Amino acid sequence: MGTSVRSAFVRLVRGVDDGGNDGTDGLPLVVGAAVVRDGRVLSAQRSGPAAAAGRWELPGGKVEPGETPEAALERELTEELRLNITRVGWLDGASPITTGDGRRLQLRVAVVRAREGDPQLTEHTATGWLPPESLGVVDWLEADRPFLPQLARVVAILGPMRGIFFSEEAARSVAARLRTGGYDAEVLRERLSGEDDDEDHPWAVVSDAPELVLDTLVDEFDGWLDVEEEPVAPVIPLRLPKAPKRPGGQPG
Ligand SMILES: Nc1nc2c([nH]c(=O)n2[C@H]2C[C@H](O)[C@@H](COP(=O)(O)OP(=O)(O)OP(=O)(O)O)O2)c(=O)[nH]1
Image 1 (cartoon, rainbow, N blue to C red):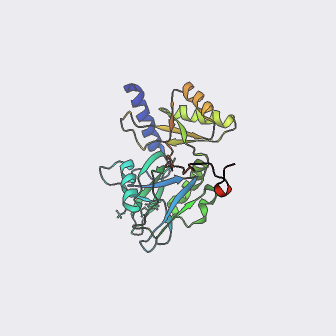
Image 2 (cartoon, rainbow, N blue to C red):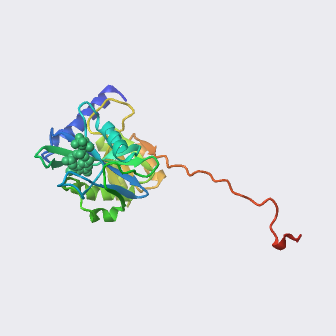
Image 3 (cartoon, helix red, strand yellow):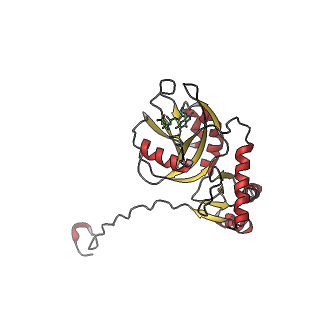
């Protein structure tokens, strides 16, 4: 990608970050992971402090000084639940948090995949996998609630494939075209602010459209298809009989 395109992208992302009117500007960041597996979202029940104990959250925690939000997510998910994650994209928006001792923070949420293995409890008292239509059944921390409608839509359509674009405009145009064609489509932001790295993907369109449809739009809007690798099931050797089976073993 050329420098001018990249810096335009960086400005674009920063502009979106700065332009928010949700009162979260500049507040220290807490990142939460919506781990999605088999169409369900992992929720985790807090063990403390007293005011939050028993309530549900997206596993994660505070971003440490000098740490990227992505690294913080990976660290927290390993520490708290022993899960190795890959990131799918950041949901839009940030939500203000006021802690029990009066500190103000902001919550951002990423949709992630966990490689393999079940979550192991180290800090939480329980975990549960919620289908998108039942996200509201648990008692979420306040800051998580604004994300639930968006999260439900993304989970409902999250397939193994998505289109990636370097401009928000392209991603939103593709999503609009898909919706016009009768498909569901959501735009996810791939990172919080412009880090200059060719490997980083700025905007993703998640849709239930068939590959051919998404592929055509990806070509037209100068993006590419990102195919999520599905875990490969282990091959269990079949135990085949060595001879034809006949009742009583008699020749037929
Ligand atoms: N992890 C997480 N914290 C959330 C969510 N929603 C929400 O309001 N919070 C609040 C609870 C806490 O006040 C704060 C995050 O604190 P934490 O205790 O999880 O963070 P941490 O692991 O970095 O903790 P610490 O040991 O540094 O205190 O954000 C959420 O979905 N996930």
